[in-house]
Length: 288
Length: 288
Image (cartoon, rainbow over all chains, first blue to last red; front, side, top):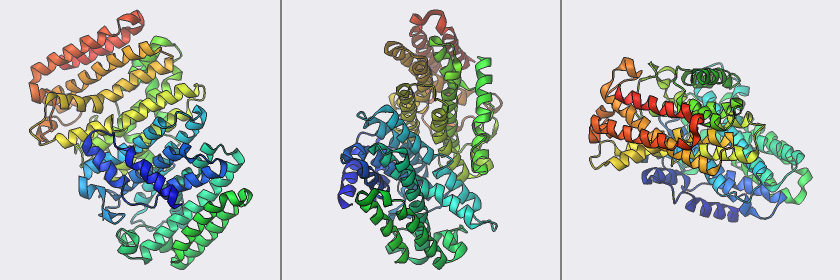
């Protein structure tokens, strides 16, 4: 895992070197190269590895996933959205570069994620590359990140929000990109349709569990542990899963989702050991 | 021309019907379906028409171009950017839906433009579709819209800005998408590399001329004629071409660019009559 993270960080560092204009590059690099867990790239490489060994094939897409994730974080933190002053333990992008440049850095990273993949995938078959692009594009659009954020924004301060709506929001806001991380890894590795379907279910459950854990930590942890302000969601009148059903029942839901996720990996045997482990890590965060 | 505009408007109207969640769809549709000249889709269809007659092949991309354009307008109008209250004669997106939803509507339209093209291009050869996608993705990224906006933002209020920087900004901010409109039309029509190169030069000159005309109109026209607030650029301390070299010399530059643009069309004979006419329309706006 640590080796994957190192490879991703190295590739990310050089990925924006040639971007112009300089001020935009600085704003993009500031958030992209901030210390992060690189969960999405790692999941992509782990899924790829089930089917093929040459991870360099999946590395550009792994980096693109981190760029998409970073773009959504920059936009989420803006005053018009969550208005977060900190991210990954440092001042958020707009606190350093101003709101306008942060908006543009987000836009630029959304596009550059796809551009970077296209520029570094000469060896890929066009149809496989198109499938990867289609999956990533879907994740950014209304059925993914922007749709999830819109549900989030529209439900704030309302009192008629139910757990299903909160789950739909989570699936789009967080789950979609986690799912795409695993699925693009599998596509690049040459997985069969049946295998892609099983990994999709694994990732969907994992992604939802991951976001519920994040919400639990927002309720229960400290700034030092979490790297960003805590208790913000409640203060903003946001609907989160633990707020709706309580922390204990939210933990129970995480447990159920992780069990379902791991069950999908049975057919892959030892090749999926790391994906099994990744699910346990998410589970462990909730219990901590 | 009018027939193309009608076809584009009809396709655009149905394009977002199935988008969820509803509030995001409303915000996307509000700006996308506002009355617009549909210049970019029209240029795409006109370029396509030089090489092939079945315009339905290029219609999804034509609509995607308008979605990308609309996305950039929504983000440009935000308070953190140009802070424009009006667009196309109506209140700008964030004035109706709030800043957060406008931000998301822009993000969603950026992605949905590509998604819509992918979903409606089954008949296209994967490699041709990939070329179109690559061109459009480049236009949104640092070497296109977001890069041009970043130069714009970074040069405001500074006194060491030269005409070359302003031109670079225009080429990225406006020229890149106009160029992509013509070039994707040509790619979809099956143009040769040499023909694509000539149309690229045509479109690059036309795009720069178009933006200089826009800046001239910002100096010389009224709200009623322009459909948005005028004199904003100067008030915001923005560097525009007419502000740097004067309105008369800016008009002279437009004339030169249009002449160069039209010269590139010589080899296409009558098939490029409409593209020639489009260049004259841009020229005419400057003189008005």
